[in-house]
Image (tube, rainbow, N blue to C red; front, side):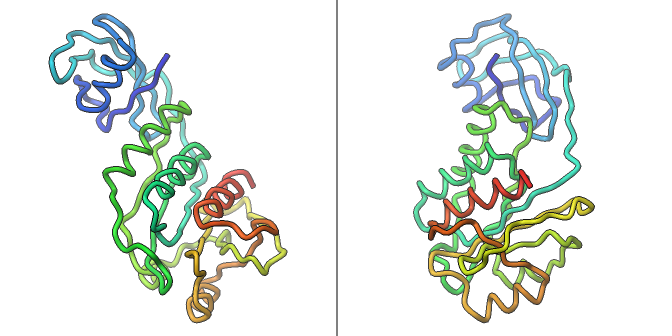
Length: 226
């Protein structure tokens, strides 16, 4: 059964994109049962009561499953200039299971603004496609300095570095893990020194030189699966 997304667990309405997807694309009809998630690990069941012009009324959501995550994986990277590549990357990170994404502004960054509305739509589409009950949190873009000012209490802090041969080795006692991916022109020497001073360890993503969005997907996969 197809999965739909709602930001409210008390909703009795499907509207906008979810309404179109449910009734126009998938051709669901009145009295059909549907599944929904709020992106917080909850799965709900409902039934379509009335299809109207711009929305459909549904039964109050009945929770049928709830999943909790004991660990949080956080990916930090300089925003990619190309919007299509950026959206592709976010889709894949959603499928992989990244919990949080922070875009940062660095000396060599190519973008300082993010179209969060478009990214949110891509994330919702990806979580529905892969039947995930979790929606990654996307943070407002901030400077590298601002991000580093928040000192995460974890030993699982990594920075992807082409010169490194060290593989990721996560401590199982820490509940938060972070990986930082630099821009196409990489971090400056000054920025790298700042990152190291905050306890980040350099690791390898392999021998190939990767584009930023590819490095983010590879790093995200390692973060979730180590």
